[in-house]
Image (cartoon, rainbow, N blue to C red; front, side, top):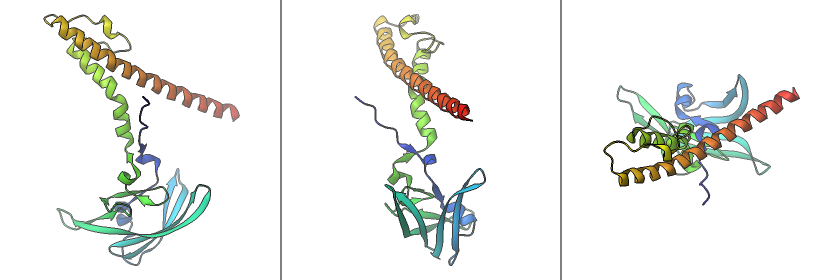
Length: 206
C-alpha cells in the first residue's frame, strides 16, 4: 500500500498575518496601500489592501492560475476579541470557511491552513521522527542502549526475569518499528544526497 502524501507546510505558502497588519496600522478604517513580502531585502510580492471599515479589509492582487493571469478583488471579514490586560485583538474570518484565524495563506485566494490542508514544518518533522523515537523507547524497555543502526533487534539479549514469550513478542514489535525507522533514515539520506547533487551541479556551472 502506498504511503499517504504528507500535507504541505505553512512555510511553503505566502501568509498574511492580521497581527502584523494591526501593528503596521493597516486596519485603521480608510487605510489604503500596498503590503509587501520580502526575501533577503528584495520585494518578492505585493498586494493592495484597503481597510473599508473596522470589520473588513479588501484585498486586490493578481495571480497566475494554470498559466493564466487573474485579477482578484474580494473582502475579508475581521473580528475583534478583548485582551486580558485591555485593548482588543483582531482576527481574520477565513473567506472560505469562516474560521477565526490569525493567518491566511495564499493559493489563488487567501484561506486558513485548515482549508489549505497545511500543517507546520515542525509537525512534519515530528511525524518522520516517530519510528525512531518509538524504537528507542522499546529498546530501553529491553535494557538496550544501542540504536537500530548499530544493533539489529534479533541480537538483543533477553532481560533477566522477562518471560520468553513476552520477550519474543517485544522483539517482533521492535523489528516492525525498526523497519519503518530504517525506511525513514534511507529516505532522509536520499534527500540529503539529492540536495548535495543539486548544490554540486550549481557550483559546477559557476
